[in-house]
Image 1 (cartoon, rainbow, N blue to C red):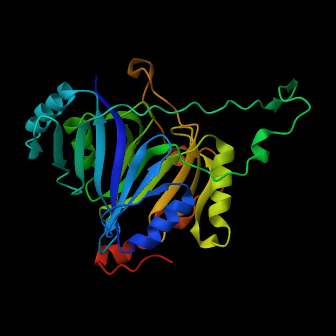
Image 2 (image 1 turned 90 degrees about the vertical axis):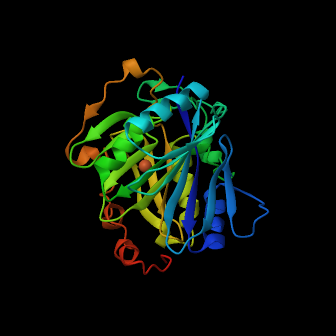
Image 3 (image 1 turned 30 degrees about the vertical axis):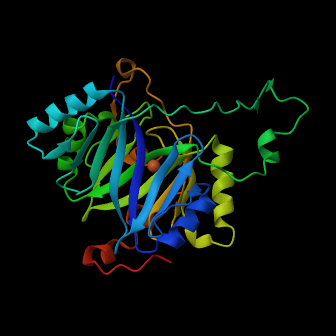
Length: 313
Ligand SMILES: [Fe+2]
């Protein structure tokens, strides 16, 4: 069958408690852990999807990928042998480190995530009063925004091509679209992308992305996060061209960006999707405010490079 889910990630941050509080506000659920040194956070449909542990500098430590059955793991084993990669495999769990980025990837046989259906809200359009005589239900929402699942991670890599080869030829990620000179959008599920690797002056985590029901939840979530914290704003509201999703990026107290997104392209039949090459600004976005300089080059990169990192304010 194949890979099907970006199951979970582990982030190292210098300020675990403060960062965990941020993600609770973001709408994730904190799971009381036995270990006081780490925090585990969950989504409504994906379960426990992010573990925060202490590290001197912020970085992505581990990604866990879900596969359907043991045949998938056996196939990955053969691919990794062809790449001469060293890995550990006990028949149920396969662990391998990307030799370039040093990210640990764990592939396990797990059940697919079942997302509960989101309501299709009626919308009005010219000549189409589908919501006649009523207010939009989305303007009446007042509950906290709750991300449904972890969608993707974007990392910077010292050797983008080597990292990408590891994930495609070694683990079986598929290419959805490509931006020449930048990167390819890779998937291990029916989501348009679960991983993007950019060329960068160091290995670092650019952002994690969390799916919410619709564009109103993207806006409501970000608006709530910015109340009293305008410094959290990074870029949004906008719509990407690649993947088509609405986005709004915010910054956590460790300096990682976190994205609310909705309406991402889904690829449920690999034969029916034609990967395209996207050039120019469309590689970055379709509409929205111009990207902030700090989105393109996070402000703490120089400090991360010298290993002299203080948590971003
Ligand atoms: Fe994203």
